[in-house]
Amino acid sequence: MKLLTPGTVPEATAMLRDSGGRAKPIAGATDVFVHWPVRVPADDEIFIDLSGLAELRPHRWTDDELILGALTTYWDVITDPRAAEEFAILVQAARTVGSIQIQTRGTWAGNIANASPAADGVPALMARDAVVELTSAEGVEQVPLDAFYLGYKRFVMKPDQLITAIRLPRRPHHFESFIKVGTRRAQAITKVGVAIAHSDAGWRIVANSMAPTVRRCRALEEALDDQAPLRSPNDFTPLLTRDLAPIDDIRSTAAYRLGVLARVLYHELAPVCGSVGPSGAAS
Ligand SMILES: Cc1cc2nc3c(=O)[nH]c(=O)nc-3n(C[C@H](O)[C@H](O)[C@H](O)COP(=O)(O)OP(=O)(O)OC[C@H]3O[C@@H](n4cnc5c(N)ncnc54)[C@H](O)[C@@H]3O)c2cc1C
View 1 (cartoon, rainbow, N blue to C red):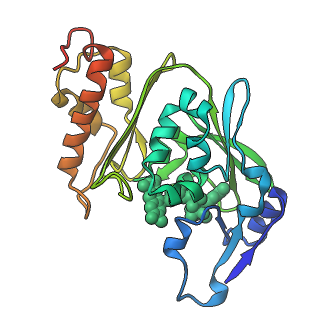
View 2: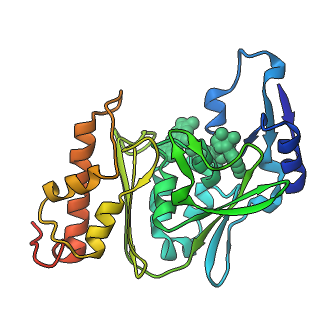
């Protein structure tokens, strides 16, 4: 195995290009180490260690955006009081990831690129209209996170591209919430997860572990934007199935996932809206 250690982003993207797309970037390595190649022939794998690229580490605030670097960890966000004020949903989601050890090493960019349908950082970022900055030796591209995934573990990022930043518009929110349902409160893979955000840009409802990718529930978002009456969890189900496709697997069943998500959403949204929709009574 080869481990490459670039000193700058251009060096890293040149290494990616020169490997013909074979090299794999490593950030916090919390996902990469799970699949660490202990039995493949040594020359089969090339890794590019991004951890020395200081320019990718910090997150920063501009007048309009919060910009997470590709090496910004969950812990960096949890410990920033400004993030708790303006991006509470990111802090809520970050606190559900693994354990403190994972939160101090794992990065938001690694969560996006690992492309797990159960990723907990991605729904919160997507609910806040995150844009992913992709950099290659050829240049820089900006991709809305809700257009990043093409299917299970497939995305628009090309093998010669790196995530170099995640940009989040700073926008006042009337409501936001992140709910993770798992077998316990720490070190649990999500069975059902959802990020909910409401601003003047409309509702965002983003589910994880409910489809081959983390996905926006656009039919439900439209119904909420139109103030359609949603009087019971049963009213949520047909809207959710237009966008989601949960499966039976070792952790849960499709029916359980859908039933729980509909109930979680109903109970989160009913108190916020007074009633869900103009004529619906919260109960
Ligand atoms: C014990 C344990 C518990 C966990 N619990 C959770 C949990 O509760 N919720 C959750 O969502 N995840 C969880 N994870 C998974 C993991 O911690 C997260 O997905 C984390 O955000 C990955 O970030 P990383 O920096 O460690 O990524 P890495 O492991 O370094 O990389 C992950 C993938 O992203 C790619 N990559 C990394 N950075 C870049 C970049 N800048 N550009 C392009 N590609 C890149 C890598 O090539 C790799 O394919 C857990 C992992 C462990 C080991």
